[in-house]
Length: 150
Length: 426
Image (cartoon, rainbow over all chains, first blue to last red; front, top):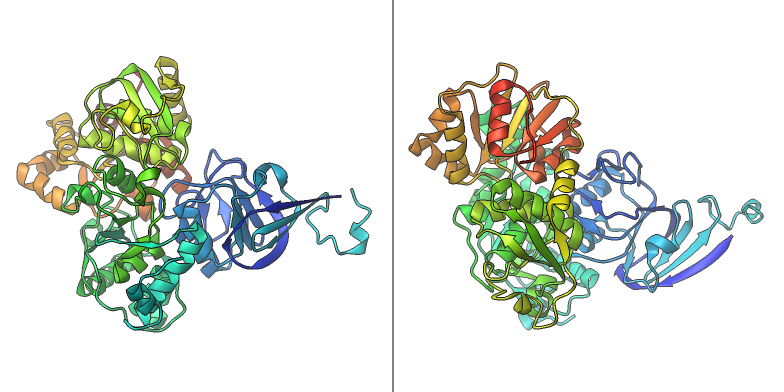
């Protein structure tokens, strides 16, 4: 198990921890996610069919239609939202999207979060700071039985 | 962030709870962007009337004021919505009652939208009902600060008109409509409007299809940045730049591009890059053109076309005229439907000019207000569709789970007449 700390800028204040879901490709809102199920549906996307509900969504940027924020707001209203966002490069779409999803979010990190974080890592966002624990199998590392696990 | 005295007063409730909620959202949004201040705007293009399951539930349980608060201001408050503070238009939304017997679209959505149009019309929202407000009377001036949604309209406003807007969303345009304010960030600031990527075109680009493919390529190269296009391009028209921008905003997140000598903020390539040395270009030649074409056609396997879709973004009068010319005296295959999406105001022009009659005599339809992607609606049983739009061929397969072909308007019309896809890159 290894620990990395990334420093960045707060987009939406707050503290949250959970399992990371990392996209190396930008994410579309409208036509890119199904807000009823919290699933990525863009055909050519590396995460097509994957659910982000309850995960810390790590992605390089938002792309596509201006429906982005509205679609992520709908995930909040439907109970299918991610619990946090780590955004490589902020834009109007992703900034407003994080605001209306009302989850802790961070950007402008001192390392590329899409390389520093791997899907399944345990991530804690504390305002502008992101703590990353690798090799936890996505579980909270405080559990003693997890300590010896690779 | 810096707020003027009048902005502080709005924040503190001096203009009522709805404006207070709007200013709260704008402050949260500004913090997320790290914007230093707000700028004044008096041109909003947003969406309030588009039906959705969440909106239907909110309206049924609490009424339109609550739906606006939750969706358009991201507020949990209970208050009445005041009149729009600045000119505000509704972009494309769902289908209306005139589509009832043509489009398989829920009647309750049509009713919800009619109710929404009445509510928002009373509050001063201009129901343009198109993704191309610049075609039907909302034509911002060069340098005008706006708060627009709709990626294809944003890129057109910034690049072709030289207006200044970011790619706003439902809540930010809602807040802007009640305050006349938007974060002064990104495209609103002159220093952020220069080119970042140079694309040198070495294959002839002189028609609607090629402008769309070049746009799709440019979005892939530039991502969210600002491509500058030079080389062997013809002088484009409104229709071609509408397609180019929609495609660039689809494959990437482009909100602003420059074509030296054509778009207003770049007299020369050097000016587009603020006088700096031009970056090493990405070349768009025959191989790149072929690769884009293959990408846009990779979802098609069956050549039996059930559905032809034209007018994404919403058709210009010229596109409707050309479609009528291509369909004149012909008849659609009994197994294929053809729809052209258009602004209602321009459909009226097509009606008066006789284009609608020619298209309908062949079995096609001109439909206003919406599109299959917005409304998640295609002719019943559609498995394979064909379109001349790089944007629609990108999105619709994922939204409706259907196959897709991309070609020219004439190839699409031929597919509608024969029921078979026979397109090829020429």
